[in-house]
Length: 82
Picture 1 (cartoon, one colour):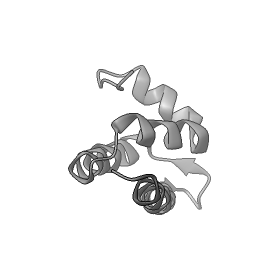
Picture 2 (cartoon, one colour):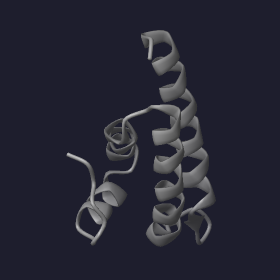
Picture 3 (cartoon, helix red, strand yellow):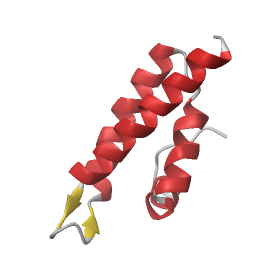
Picture 4 (spheres, one colour):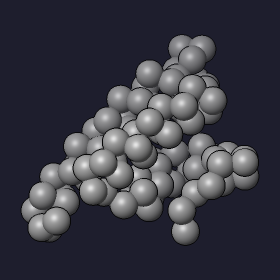
């Protein structure tokens, strides 16, 4: 995968993550439903793999954007790629 294409994919996935975060917010956007977000993230990771994007890139975006969710996912039974 060339770098330009990879950067375009990363930008697109970052935008999708932003939308997923907004869609997972509840109580007038004061609370993030981690279970809802987690469900969406798992599907996004599958799509990223199909597109040839490493799972770690998705987790990196999530760690920077929603560190509380990242730590939630890290401490659940789900595996985060190292």
